[in-house]
Length: 277
Image 1 (cartoon, one colour):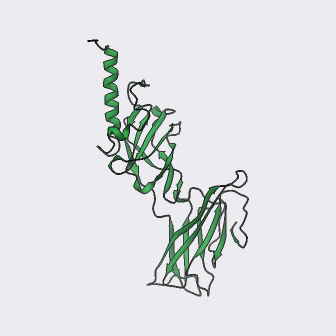
Image 2: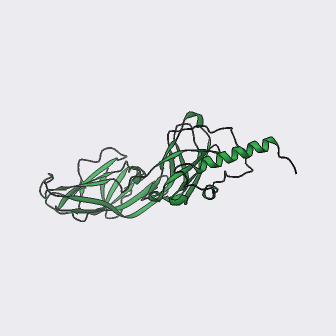
Image 3: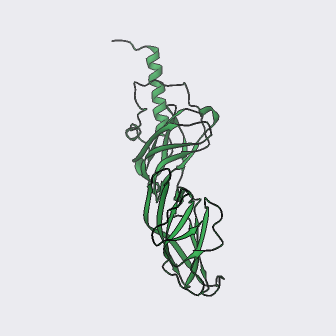
């Protein structure tokens, strides 16, 4: 029988340790050999780039770019300098190790990395199996903010005071668009409806555009439908927050429909009302 070389035995042992390390990433026992094999790096014909991982740190991961609960990027932070400019491959996994998406990229040199992936539902993610320079790295997973950051307070009909003993809730519903327009100059557009439930006829809704749910902060905002105005001014573009409310002496129970744009040259829809700037 042909005897294997010591080099072959060493490579076999290193591959075995590497695969087991990757299998234990995130939640122990969740990523199996079968599910981890979806990563192209699990090939016995591939040479290892270095003798050990670039770090033994546990790296935080969370969602990157996305919208309305669906994401197409994973954000990795806390990357040490020893891992700069190295190749990254990852699997986003759900319950029982189910593969939700995969992605490849590089770590860069800033301590963070945004790795493009297939589209996945952020609420289904249990963790991320991560390889940096073909070595398994332990990770933690932080779920995205759900639901989107929008809040509401009740108002009196004829002034802007908030009466005691009353309540108000608001939600974003019926997203009408999220798509790349011609760039330049069109940028991106995002339309949505605000549904309000209040025990008073007037209310004030606050929207936090700095939250990752919105993907970017708008440079202009238009009111497509509804009887509301801006409270407290818009501030300076790009806008991080917006407060809207019905005029005094009126009711606005059903809310408003807004369209916001990323570019600096707004094209307001026919019949719409400019809110910001």
